[in-house]
Image (tube, rainbow, N blue to C red):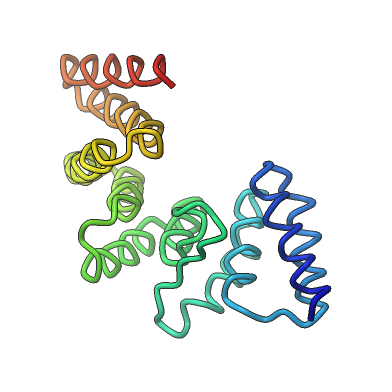
Length: 194
Protein backbone atom coordinates (compact mmCIF):
# COMPACT_ATOMS: atom_id res chain seq x y z
CA UNK A 1 0.00 0.00 0.00
CA UNK A 2 3.00 2.31 0.48
CA UNK A 3 3.68 2.13 -3.26
CA UNK A 4 0.09 3.11 -4.00
CA UNK A 5 0.31 6.14 -1.68
CA UNK A 6 3.68 7.12 -3.20
CA UNK A 7 2.18 7.03 -6.71
CA UNK A 8 -0.83 8.98 -5.49
CA UNK A 9 1.40 11.72 -4.04
CA UNK A 10 3.43 11.83 -7.27
CA UNK A 11 0.16 12.15 -9.20
CA UNK A 12 -0.91 15.08 -7.01
CA UNK A 13 2.44 16.80 -7.57
CA UNK A 14 2.16 16.30 -11.35
CA UNK A 15 -1.44 17.57 -11.35
CA UNK A 16 -0.45 20.77 -9.54
CA UNK A 17 2.36 21.20 -12.08
CA UNK A 18 -0.21 21.02 -14.92
CA UNK A 19 1.28 17.72 -16.12
CA UNK A 20 -2.04 15.96 -16.44
CA UNK A 21 -0.87 13.00 -18.55
CA UNK A 22 1.77 12.13 -15.96
CA UNK A 23 -0.73 12.71 -13.13
CA UNK A 24 -3.15 10.32 -14.80
CA UNK A 25 -0.46 7.70 -15.31
CA UNK A 26 0.60 7.86 -11.65
CA UNK A 27 -3.01 7.86 -10.42
CA UNK A 28 -3.83 4.76 -12.48
CA UNK A 29 -0.70 3.08 -11.10
CA UNK A 30 -1.87 3.94 -7.58
CA UNK A 31 -5.22 2.32 -8.36
CA UNK A 32 -3.52 -0.81 -9.74
CA UNK A 33 -1.46 -0.94 -6.53
CA UNK A 34 -4.61 -1.20 -4.46
CA UNK A 35 -5.61 2.37 -3.61
CA UNK A 36 -9.39 2.64 -3.90
CA UNK A 37 -10.41 5.79 -2.07
CA UNK A 38 -12.47 8.83 -2.95
CA UNK A 39 -9.34 11.00 -2.99
CA UNK A 40 -7.99 8.88 -5.86
CA UNK A 41 -11.32 8.84 -7.71
CA UNK A 42 -11.61 12.65 -7.68
CA UNK A 43 -8.02 12.93 -8.85
CA UNK A 44 -8.73 10.54 -11.74
CA UNK A 45 -11.90 12.48 -12.62
CA UNK A 46 -10.01 15.78 -12.54
CA UNK A 47 -7.15 14.41 -14.67
CA UNK A 48 -9.51 13.06 -17.31
CA UNK A 49 -11.45 16.34 -17.26
CA UNK A 50 -8.30 18.42 -17.78
CA UNK A 51 -7.44 16.13 -20.71
CA UNK A 52 -10.92 16.67 -22.24
CA UNK A 53 -11.82 13.02 -21.74
CA UNK A 54 -15.16 13.83 -20.19
CA UNK A 55 -16.91 10.46 -20.30
CA UNK A 56 -14.00 8.83 -18.45
CA UNK A 57 -14.01 11.69 -15.96
CA UNK A 58 -17.71 11.17 -15.39
CA UNK A 59 -17.16 7.48 -14.66
CA UNK A 60 -14.78 8.30 -11.79
CA UNK A 61 -16.74 11.17 -10.31
CA UNK A 62 -19.88 9.03 -10.29
CA UNK A 63 -18.04 6.43 -8.20
CA UNK A 64 -17.94 9.09 -5.51
CA UNK A 65 -21.28 10.80 -6.02
CA UNK A 66 -23.24 7.55 -6.17
CA UNK A 67 -23.03 7.55 -2.38
CA UNK A 68 -24.55 11.07 -2.34
CA UNK A 69 -21.64 12.41 -0.39
CA UNK A 70 -20.22 15.76 -1.38
CA UNK A 71 -16.62 14.66 -1.27
CA UNK A 72 -13.93 17.34 -1.27
CA UNK A 73 -10.28 16.39 -1.47
CA UNK A 74 -7.87 18.53 0.53
CA UNK A 75 -5.07 17.44 -1.82
CA UNK A 76 -6.50 19.37 -4.77
CA UNK A 77 -7.51 22.98 -5.23
CA UNK A 78 -11.04 23.53 -4.01
CA UNK A 79 -12.88 23.34 -7.30
CA UNK A 80 -10.83 20.44 -8.73
CA UNK A 81 -11.31 18.47 -5.52
CA UNK A 82 -15.06 19.01 -5.17
CA UNK A 83 -16.85 15.99 -6.64
CA UNK A 84 -20.22 17.70 -7.22
CA UNK A 85 -18.60 20.68 -8.90
CA UNK A 86 -16.49 18.46 -11.15
CA UNK A 87 -19.54 16.38 -12.12
CA UNK A 88 -21.60 19.47 -12.97
CA UNK A 89 -18.79 21.03 -14.99
CA UNK A 90 -18.26 17.80 -16.93
CA UNK A 91 -21.92 17.85 -17.95
CA UNK A 92 -21.52 21.47 -19.07
CA UNK A 93 -18.43 20.53 -21.07
CA UNK A 94 -20.48 17.74 -22.67
CA UNK A 95 -23.11 20.41 -23.44
CA UNK A 96 -25.64 18.60 -21.27
CA UNK A 97 -26.59 21.87 -19.64
CA UNK A 98 -29.92 20.80 -18.14
CA UNK A 99 -28.17 18.02 -16.23
CA UNK A 100 -25.43 20.43 -15.11
CA UNK A 101 -27.97 22.96 -13.83
CA UNK A 102 -29.84 20.19 -12.00
CA UNK A 103 -26.63 19.09 -10.26
CA UNK A 104 -25.78 22.65 -9.23
CA UNK A 105 -29.33 23.36 -8.05
CA UNK A 106 -29.17 20.30 -5.80
CA UNK A 107 -25.72 21.27 -4.56
CA UNK A 108 -26.89 24.82 -3.78
CA UNK A 109 -29.76 23.44 -1.69
CA UNK A 110 -27.10 21.94 0.59
CA UNK A 111 -24.50 24.69 0.39
CA UNK A 112 -25.90 28.05 -0.72
CA UNK A 113 -22.66 29.95 -0.11
CA UNK A 114 -20.45 27.86 -2.40
CA UNK A 115 -19.14 30.17 -5.13
CA UNK A 116 -18.16 27.26 -7.39
CA UNK A 117 -21.75 26.03 -7.52
CA UNK A 118 -23.00 29.50 -8.48
CA UNK A 119 -20.40 29.80 -11.25
CA UNK A 120 -21.20 26.28 -12.48
CA UNK A 121 -24.92 26.94 -12.51
CA UNK A 122 -24.29 30.23 -14.30
CA UNK A 123 -22.28 28.44 -16.98
CA UNK A 124 -25.01 25.84 -17.42
CA UNK A 125 -27.73 28.47 -17.71
CA UNK A 126 -25.62 30.40 -20.21
CA UNK A 127 -25.40 27.24 -22.31
CA UNK A 128 -29.21 27.07 -22.22
CA UNK A 129 -29.40 30.69 -23.46
CA UNK A 130 -30.86 31.80 -20.12
CA UNK A 131 -28.65 34.85 -19.90
CA UNK A 132 -30.54 36.82 -17.25
CA UNK A 133 -30.57 33.81 -14.89
CA UNK A 134 -26.91 33.17 -15.67
CA UNK A 135 -26.09 36.78 -14.84
CA UNK A 136 -27.86 36.40 -11.49
CA UNK A 137 -25.75 33.33 -10.65
CA UNK A 138 -22.48 35.04 -11.52
CA UNK A 139 -23.48 38.00 -9.37
CA UNK A 140 -24.09 35.64 -6.43
CA UNK A 141 -20.65 34.11 -6.99
CA UNK A 142 -19.15 37.59 -7.15
CA UNK A 143 -20.64 38.52 -3.77
CA UNK A 144 -19.09 35.42 -2.23
CA UNK A 145 -15.71 35.99 -3.90
CA UNK A 146 -15.65 39.61 -2.69
CA UNK A 147 -16.22 38.45 0.87
CA UNK A 148 -13.60 35.69 0.60
CA UNK A 149 -11.15 38.10 -0.99
CA UNK A 150 -11.56 40.52 1.91
CA UNK A 151 -10.73 37.68 4.30
CA UNK A 152 -7.81 36.30 2.26
CA UNK A 153 -6.92 38.39 -0.78
CA UNK A 154 -3.85 36.36 -1.68
CA UNK A 155 -5.90 33.19 -2.04
CA UNK A 156 -9.00 34.59 -3.76
CA UNK A 157 -8.00 37.67 -5.79
CA UNK A 158 -7.35 35.63 -8.95
CA UNK A 159 -10.73 33.90 -8.72
CA UNK A 160 -12.40 37.25 -8.05
CA UNK A 161 -10.80 38.76 -11.15
CA UNK A 162 -11.73 35.73 -13.26
CA UNK A 163 -15.36 35.95 -12.12
CA UNK A 164 -15.41 39.67 -12.88
CA UNK A 165 -14.15 38.97 -16.42
CA UNK A 166 -16.85 36.33 -16.98
CA UNK A 167 -19.45 38.70 -15.60
CA UNK A 168 -18.16 41.50 -17.84
CA UNK A 169 -18.41 39.27 -20.92
CA UNK A 170 -21.91 38.15 -19.96
CA UNK A 171 -23.01 41.77 -19.41
CA UNK A 172 -21.65 42.58 -22.87
CA UNK A 173 -23.74 39.75 -24.36
CA UNK A 174 -26.79 41.30 -22.68
CA UNK A 175 -25.88 44.77 -24.02
CA UNK A 176 -25.23 46.06 -20.52
CA UNK A 177 -22.16 47.82 -21.84
CA UNK A 178 -21.38 50.13 -18.94
CA UNK A 179 -21.56 47.30 -16.42
CA UNK A 180 -19.50 45.13 -18.77
CA UNK A 181 -16.80 47.78 -19.00
CA UNK A 182 -16.83 48.41 -15.24
CA UNK A 183 -16.49 44.70 -14.37
CA UNK A 184 -13.73 44.21 -16.94
CA UNK A 185 -11.76 47.23 -15.72
CA UNK A 186 -11.99 46.03 -12.13
CA UNK A 187 -10.73 42.60 -13.18
CA UNK A 188 -7.78 44.14 -15.02
CA UNK A 189 -6.85 46.21 -11.96
CA UNK A 190 -6.83 43.07 -9.81
CA UNK A 191 -4.75 41.16 -12.38
CA UNK A 192 -2.19 43.99 -12.41
CA UNK A 193 -1.70 43.55 -8.67
CA UNK A 194 -1.20 39.79 -8.86
